[in-house]
Length: 469
Image (cartoon, rainbow, N blue to C red; front, side):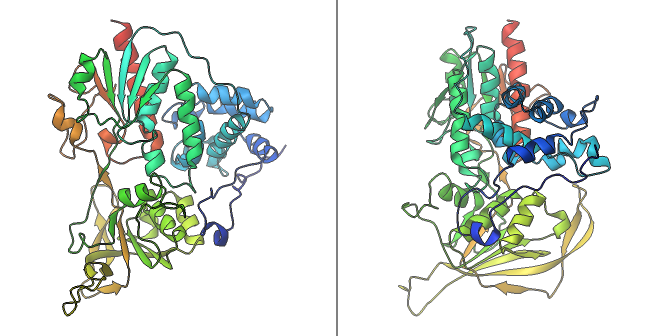
């Protein structure tokens, strides 16, 4: 039978419709389409796709089970190595990881691995299947700091081995960046809650509203009887540009803007969470977070939304699918541009004017690409005399985040690098005995799946250390 050279497209809401609601954009495969897509897999002997997966999902095996209609077997196979299959199927950059290694992709489009993972996880969850059986305790206690993807993965992998795991989360809801950073239209929060509930069924104890470094310190966790600590506290400290006007009302970090909309439910008509809605919005940056912020602004009622990015479309770091969705929805991409100043309303004649101190415009300069920088991308260079002004009411800065300094400042002997990331070895071990770390707390802002891979690596190291005694 001839192989279909193209992967099956993902059905989506029409752009004009989805731009006005927060329902999930991607609608998922049907059973027929999923099994047909699964039949494109060559079931290679050397399985290069598995090597491209940071958590080592047995990809050909789960796809083969799906092709045969054995969906629960497919889910079981995925769950052997992944604690968050419904999440990964939605937000992981498969195009640069497992799918980029797909043998079929050498000649045709690669198999839609992420779409098939999502289908299998959603099928399992729709069955309302019985909770997994809690393993017998092995008597060891481990503390996990942060309930984002690295923390949840570490906790889940250890719980499956019988460890008594407590996850400490600073916010009031578990999920980390999955709940505060990624919008509902990309990752419905009910899916995150379901994945968290599965881990709780395995015996993971999740304690919210606990700030490690303030409520408790790492040393106090050891004093309470925990034998190892994994730090997966993420990178919640936003970066700014250092240009004039960033303190004006109406300027947000992407972290704050998305947290208000996602975790604090500002997108709901019934919410009283304050956030700027409507008007004209500029989002500075070109990553996935910038796309999320821009598309959120549109759904909150903005009449015009700009993406302002200093390089060209080819250098945009966001997933191509997210860029295409944003373009379809009408986001205006102002490429090869960089902000130099944010201008505010200043009515000196009427100090009581309510507009005083609010954003009224953003001044930018056009750029051109010069020689490659240290990252290998061509360095953007200002074009003299090319300044222009965008009339905007809200500015969202989405140029990255850094690890929060709280834990390092309260944990003696914890080595960090010049960017604030915790220094670890190849197993995830820090400079402190029995203290491990992974995810954005180490690398700075990165992908969900790379954070999960770090959590898995640390869990394996913790198991070796504690089981050996």
